Image (cartoon, rainbow, N blue to C red; front, side, top):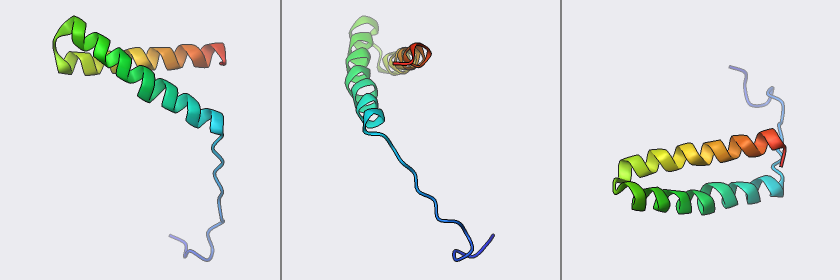
Length: 67
């Protein structure tokens, strides 16, 4: 491994729209979907995995539509 003085300096840029989309989908919509599945299934494990899968489907659909 190269010493720190020889490694290039890297800057990562994260767009504000990406942060907003993450908060909206993962936290907001994910919580609502989890609670919906919890009411329907009455099982926290199934609700968690179903909520995760539903959120992933929504994210991939949005990515395909390029929104």
